[in-house]
Image (cartoon, rainbow over all chains, first blue to last red; front, side):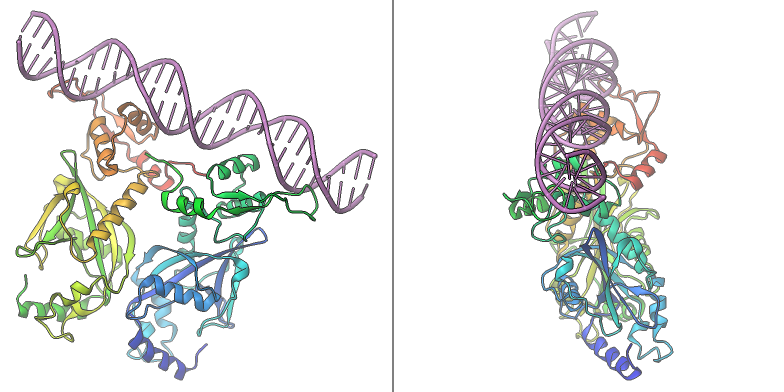
Length: 253
Length: 253
DNA sequence: TACAATTGTGTATTTAGTACACAATTGTAA
DNA sequence: TTACAATTGTGTACTAAATACACAATTGTA
C-alpha cells in the first residue's frame, strides 16, 4: 500500500508517462503438481485478490507493455502472451475509481479516470517464475485454479473469459510447450489437458490423438526410479509445434 | 472534409466528450449477389478508403459505442457485432496524426494523440443498410471483398484480421442469420460459405453437414418461377441457431 | 510372491468427412 | 414438341477420425 505522498507522486508520473483510459490485465497460467495455477496479487489487509496488470507507456506497443508488466511480476523476459478481449464497461472501474477517493482529490487522482482494460492471457513454466508484488500490493502468489479466491473489480470475469478462450484454443492449437517442463510423460501431458478442460480423458485415445498431431518426440530411454512401470519421456518437437500453432489442427470447412 | 473552423470545433468537442487514446473501427460484412461486401468510406479527393469508425463517449460502454457508430453509418439499430482485436502499435496512427497537422497546431489537434483502436466486425443484411458518410468523408459505399481498394492507416490489417477471425468462427459457430434474408435456398447459403472461405464446397456434403447442425427449417413449398428445378426454401431455426452460437459445433476434446 | 498401481499397445465399433452418380424439374433453343 | 443445358434433390460407397473397451508388462509394496 502506498502512502498519500507516494500516491500523489505516482499519479503525477502516470499522467505524464501512460496513455489515459487504458490498462492491461493478465491472466497468467502455470501448471504444477497436476494443478492449474493462476498468478494473483493482494494487499495484506484486503481480502480480494487481483490480476497482474499495468498501463501502457505513451510510445509503447501494447504487446510490449504486456510483456513489460509480466516481466516485473514473474522475472520472465519471454512469455507466451495472447490478447483475448477488451473489457470496456464504464462501471467496471467504479471500485477502482473510488479506491483512493478518500486519499486524493479527484483532479489529482489518476485512478478516478475510466479505464478500458485489455485482457492478455499468458502460459508460463511454473518453475521459472519468481512472483514479485507490484507497488500496490504486498503478496504475489500462485493460486489453484479450482480454488480461486474472490477477485476485485471485474477480474473474475476477465479470468473466466481467459479460461474460456484457452479451452477454445485447445481445439485448434497445440498447448503445452509453454506450460510443461522440457521432458514429460504422456500421463503428465494428459493431466494438463484434463486440468484445463476440467474433464477426464481416455488415456489411450488421448495418446493416439496427440501423437497424431506430430508435435512430440519420444526419448529413447524411459524415466526410471519411480514406482510402477517406467513411462517414456516426451518433448515437444519445435518445428511441428510451431507449424501447428500457425496452421491449426482441424480442417474445418 | 471539414473546414479548419469545423475541425477546431470538433477537436474541442472531442476532448470533452470522448475517451482519449481510444478509437473503434468496424469491418461491416454484407452479402449480395453472391459477393461478400465490405462497407467503406472515402473522401472525394483521396484515393484511399477507410473503415467506419469513431470514438467512445466518456460514460459509454464500448459495445454501445460500436453500435452507435454503426447506426450512424448504416441506419441499423441492432447489429451482430463481434469484438475481435485491439490494434495498439504506436506507429499505426502516424498518418492519422499528421492528417491535420498542417491545419492545426498540435495542442489543439486532438488527432495528434496516439490511438489504440478496438476492432469489431459486423454481419448485416445488405438490403437493410443505408450507407451514410461520416463527417470526415463524402462517400460511404459497399465494396466487393475480392476487389478491395487500398485502405488508410492499418485498416488493411484490421480488415484482414477480421476476415481471418470470421473464417475461424465458421468452424465452431453458425453464420448466416445476420447475412441472409429470411428465406433462402441451400445453394444460396452455400454461396455465402464459399465466398467467406474463398473456396468451392461440395454441394451434397455441404447440405448434409449444415442440416446436421439443426439450425435450419425447410419451408413446405419450394420457390417457384425461376428457371430450372424449383429449390426448397430454408430459414434459420432461431432456437437451434442460438443454441449453436453459445454451445458451438465441434466437440473438440 | 501375490498384488495394486501404472504404463504401453491394440482392436473392434461408431461417427464424421470425402468422393462421386443419377434422377427430377424447368426454361430455352432447335 | 422436343432435345438440351442448367440446376436441384437424394443417395451410396469409401476413408478417416473419434470412441469404447481389453490385455499384457513393469515396478514397488504388503
